[in-house]
Image (cartoon, rainbow, N blue to C red):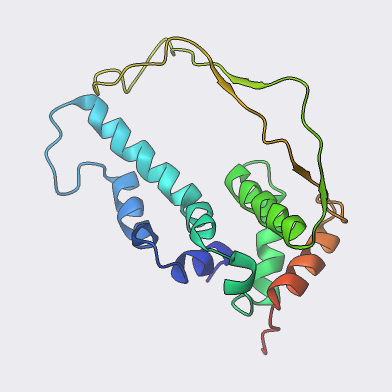
Length: 181
């Protein structure tokens, strides 16, 4: 089982049971239904793909105290594999999960700095030339939405790009066990 699989398996939210269905819907979005609108096919497929990539992050966020609740759940091998996969540019979802975990570690260890970015973050909505979801009856936001900065930025006492330091920290925080071969 992977690091993410264990986060999902130990979660109590109803969505934690979604992975099997997401895998099926990703491969064959019309499983069990008749699709009358071509856009629905793409909505189902792409939602299933997103569920597969981000279900672990959703489940991790559902824990009231994930660092405590997941203590002793992982093996060193699973943590090493997780950190290695987070370094691959094609695994942004895994890197997001790693960053959230380290934000929780910083919060728990009291490593905060009250720095507020000067400029607010603005999310631009643009319409694609070919909108495969266009007929699914939704409206695109007409204007950019201003997002207020959080205001508290965590500082971590290790370099998040240093794989060995990240692995050591996660092994320590989660009390990872060594697999006996």
